[in-house]
Figure 1 (cartoon, rainbow, N blue to C red):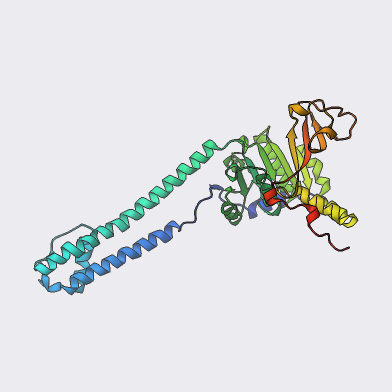
Figure 2 (cartoon, rainbow, N blue to C red; figure 1 turned 120 degrees about the vertical axis):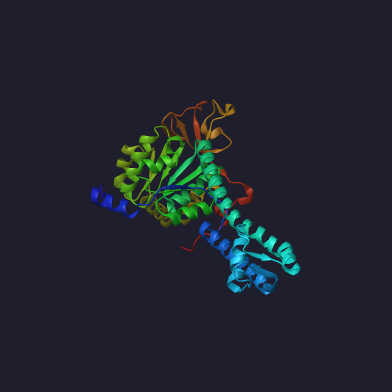
Length: 365
């Protein structure tokens, strides 16, 4: 078995050490710091505009200190006026200055307060709203799907599952990269940033309440550790894991995986099939591409099919699942269908997205 030692695993964990947190998909908004800076600039503009109004009519103001109002006094008066401090040492005495205070400076004072107070309220409201969304998300998340690793394998796997009707709100992606989680958020999936080999990270993804877990990291040793941790947290969930090396499959199954897919082996077998028969390779590729052309579907046996043989059903039956056994449609032990059986059938996808293999040109030999 080609698994790195503990030192290599520790180095890998150190490379991906990130403060784990839950990130829910949301509309793109400006960063809080940028919003605050923008509001401060707006407030400064209002302050300067007020000072210019006062200085433009400085003869209409009286300063108790020396009687005259210069540019510095104008900024001082604007500051204490907009902040509603109002020491009263500089006062408007002429009719023009008082009219300017009524119709210009007072609205600017209100605008100044709205900008500063509004920024504080907006930040507090945003934090409260985000905390409320997170708590509500955790309280309502049940029987969901957790995807460990949102690379090529994880992304393709969850798109296939979603093509069968799974809602994006029922998917949680776990990955140590914040950029990957941002990409998952952009597609509508909730995300948890952190190392999935840690139980506290998986708990944030509510793994203990998940129905199915897809383990698709980049390394086989990570797949083993994640599968072990996930199985300890959830004894009943269906865990499907991906590995690169065929010899690591038994270890994944011993770790608690219900099914293990060898990515390199599966790709190699598809390549070999395509060499022997390009048409067969196209059909097989179409079968594993959910939502278009021909699809492989697992469904229960209906009452009208009980007592019939697999070939006598309306659908094209490939296999019969009886208990924990998967039997071929022509297996003599199948006999007739039972109500507790489940069928693996080949069906045609929705006509709106139908792309049948026989309508696509075969590659030149």
